[in-house]
Image 1 (cartoon, rainbow, N blue to C red):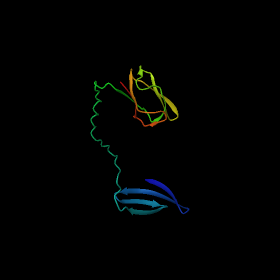
Image 2: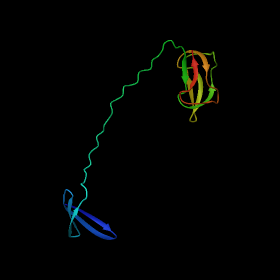
Image 3: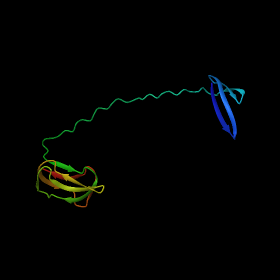
Image 4: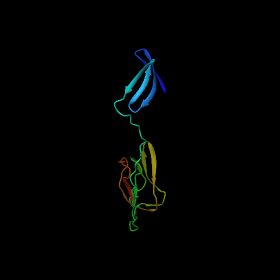
Length: 139
């Protein structure tokens, strides 16, 4: 037996539920017995079952063509080119500073991943670039 207290329009009510069978509820309100018939069955909630689709095959690994002699330097994040530290034809070594990219008010040094010769420069000082934009090509 459950007991509840309600206040409706400043009037206090004490409700005692005596029994609950299917759609019929026997209860007592302030000492007076009532039989309440519900219109619909009370549906019991079920715990939802997670249904997952079959896992997808992983993407094929990137194929590297050893014939390609050019290395592409791309922007790691969107930003503005502050300075170019190389010219076309310059010979550079690994970890040499190529350019400075400003992103979110921070200067980011873009360095060479490997040694080579600067084949082309695709950006200019003051130019805004998006992420993955081609900046410099090395041979």
